Structure formats: structure tokens, C-alpha cells
Length: 462
Image 1 (tube, rainbow, N blue to C red):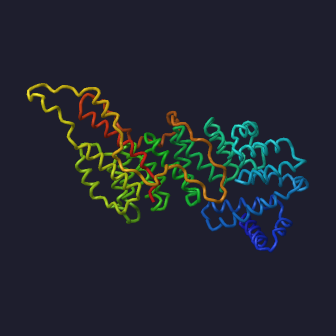
Image 2: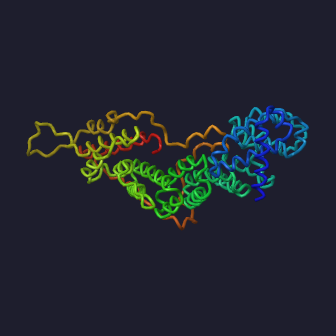
Image 3: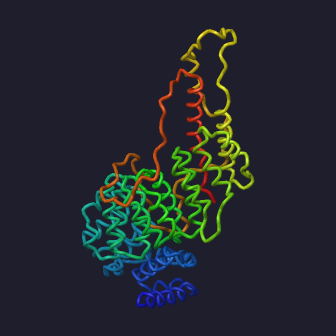
């Protein structure tokens, strides 16, 4: 109740200031720390799903930028105003404004100046310099408002080089600022880092917490990207039951889209068991509303079996899919799957007609096999407007600083505390094929073409 009352008073004052004929009213009335605190309150509301607060965020950023550009040494004698400047910078503020304001601050202690230097390096794209300056500073020794943002920034910077320390820092950010945009960002980034480390238990825990608290954040699409990628990466460690537990907290439409995306990625990667499970869950629906007949689920469930022994059944299923209900990218994916299915059932290249019927079959010349293996997928239809299924760019409104470089693809085995997570699917088996046999060579070519479907992922299903 106390926090709500404070928020209400600040919002009333800000609305009055925003509507006043002169911006000077706001600048004379509110100190930088008051404006920045108001920005944090608005951002926390947005993280909780109040998208209607976004216009107020834009207005606040404009007011803060103007106020800080005019702030002088006298303003920064109050430590709260200098800390507010640093928080503004780490909230996605204008680096030019931050650097200019820091240069005018005279009576600031050495540690705060070091943080300012690190923040400026971070904002202008010098991560190595930022890490060097910020590494010795312990966020837990700072006031909680500043420490939370510093822990978030350091955790983001160290995600690639020291993921264990990065996760520790993100935990500190959550501890120092629960229920805020800082916690939302820390949880979202923890999901991706845990997946890259092969830590299934940590991945499941962070995903559960995010869905419970921030499913309606405007940045939830970035969580969805990390979650789908993590499920694929950890498919041997995340049980289907655990996956179902997490998605059951979502609304039915979001749950369906998540399962469609998992089914698609799993089918492309040849994870037939996971693809079948996700496709079935996408079709199953909730509350008596099934999604049976969804052409996307039918397409994705068919992809993982397109080279199987039931290929005729798969071809029939593919032929019945309503193309008009698919996106451009998925129509191209359907075309590719049908082309590959056709190749699977096509007879192998015939032997020379001059070969006597009674003569033993000679192995295919190595040069011919090599030519078959080197064949490209030029016959596959192009994908118009296909884009990588990477985290979408943040909305135009500022957000916490973006994550660092992508984590390494190799990951150690899951941690020992992952007792609740069990294998959900097995990796596709790689058969030892005799490449001198024409049929086997054709199958190898088909498998490679199926792998190329990965390039046709396009945008995530809508």
C-alpha cells in the first residue's frame, strides 16, 4: 500500500509537469533522483504487463534527459542525484548526456566515478573496458537501487567469459530488486545462460519464475526465444512432464505458440520424439478447446518422419495440409518437405543398360557417389522474407542493456542438482551407411537436404 501511494503521488506530479506549458516547471520542481525513481516505477509497471504506461516512460525519459543536461556541480553534491544519473545510464539512457553530466560532477567519491566510467564504456560499446573497471566493485556493498542495476550490467557483460559468475551476479540483481524490471531482465538472461551451460535444473527454475511473474512483459518474446532454444539444447535433460508444468502456467494461446515453435525446431533437428510430443500438445489445447487440424502442427509433426519407413503416410498427410493457412515461410517449408519425401520414394539411379542381367552388381563409382554427396539444394524453393529466429529487437522504448555475445555452443553435463529433470527425447540416430550403395547415397543426400530446412525457419509462428 505504501509503495502504491508513493507511485500515485509521483504520477500525479509528473502528469502535472508533463502538461505544463513550460518544461522548466518540471526541472525546477523535481530533482534528478525523483525523476529517475519515477522512471523505475513506470518501468516496473510495464514489466508486470501494464503496457499502457509506455507513453509515460517516453515522457519521463525526455524530462530526465533535459534535467540532467542542465544539472550542475551543485546538483551532484547530493549523492542521490549522482546515483540517479548512473541508474539512468544503466536503464538505457543517453550516453552523451551521462558523459557530459559526469564531467560536471566535482564532489563525487572515487568508487562512484569508477562506476560512472564503467557505465559509459558499456553504453558506448566498449565491454572490455567496462568489465575491467567494474570487476572489483561488489554490487552488494552499494545502495540497493544502484547495486541491482550494477549486478545486472556486470552479469550481462560476463555471460560469455564467466557464465558461473554471471549467474551469481544475476541472482544478486534479483535479490536487490525483486518485483522490478531488473528482476525481469535478470531472470530472462539467466534462462539463456543456464541453457548454454547445460544446467537443466537452473534453466527450469528460471523459466518457471519468469512465467509466474513476467509472462506479460513487453520483453517476454525474448524470453520465449531463449526458452525454445533452451528446450532444444537440453532435450536430453528436460522431462516432458517438467516442460508441461512450465507451459501450463501460460495462457492457452501462448502455450500453443510455444509448443508449435518447439515442434518446428525439434523436427528440423531430427528430434522426432520431442517434435511429436510438442505437436500433440499444440493440437491438444486446453479447457475443451482443441487445436486439431492446425496445419502448422501437422506440418511440423511430419518433418521429423519425412525420411522414415512410413513415408507414404507422411506424403499423404503433407498433401492434405491447407497451404492457405500457412505463412510464406511455412509454405516454403511444406514445399521442401514434399520435395524431400518425393526423393525418398524415388527409385535409385538405374544401372547401365549394357550390364548383363546375370552379372553381379558392381559398386557405384566413387566419383558418382561424390557427385551425389556434393549435390546442393538448388531445387528447394526460396524463402521470401525469412529471418533468423533470434531474440527480437526491443521495442522503441528503452530497456535494460542487451545481453552480451552468444554463449558457446558446447556445454558441460547437467548439474547434479537436476534430480527432477529426466530425458525428454533421444537424439536422432546416425546410421552407418555404405556410401557405395546408390540407395544409401540418395538417403544421405535426402538427410542433408532436410538439414537445410533449418534455413527456412523464418519468423516464429504467429
